[in-house]
Length: 355
Image (cartoon, rainbow, N blue to C red):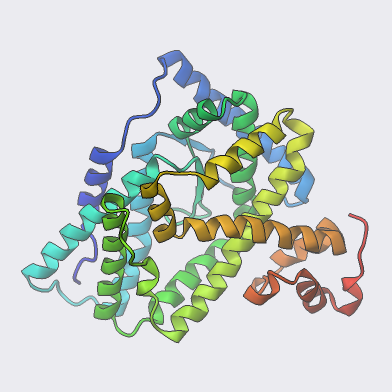
């Protein structure tokens, strides 16, 4: 089949363009890695106690990575998912003409450029593409860089980050169907395309749009240009609802646990929120094109939804949300927690309870 991305070239490009992290000694670097591994275990206990969610499947230990490793892991994961999907839709037809080969190399450079940019900004991630049930990544240089810029207590900031990322790991390991559901929706998005050639070209245009924005902050095109069919928009609505829930839940847990175990949490949260709101013109353009501005709204909207549900039915009642894909919130319910409570718990469940 025609290759969508030259993945090897993408990895090489990301590795070449990834910036080095903050200056640290070997002893400091070793200390950071040890701290993050220990604090991940500590965070796991706090998250389990607060949420009542317990992993139902085993998971690998946290991986503390640098920027290049983070980019390489994400490229490997995307390759694992996207290549079979495009192959299936194309019927494994042989590669096309020379222009197709050139296109895959160009997209490889562009994808590598975008991932190199992101590798300098991501603090942590629960990566689900490359392995089942997924793997928790913490990007040590970025965590150190941000804690220094905020003037935060290192132990407090690192635990704060771990609380958020461990909550995501818990969502996928305490809810064993979650990964398959998420990947199924990604497949449904591809299936809803109007033909493989059109899909590949739109995906390439989306990658090109992001790559151009890295170099040209005045770009006004949007990555959402790849979403064209009504069926794709329906899938995107479901994915948006899911991601808003997962991000909001992680924020809710972080804010619920934080004051109990992190003395300087209020100062960290205030400084981090200011960091989210600021940025130079290039960063603002990238945030818009990558959907990061949307993600910021997901944090706020999702946290408000989770708070509203917990306020009405308590944490055990909220956890019914993870019963099956049918109990996940619909997009229109995110702004109306009572509507979700009424649908899942019945009208009697809509009464406020202590919790």
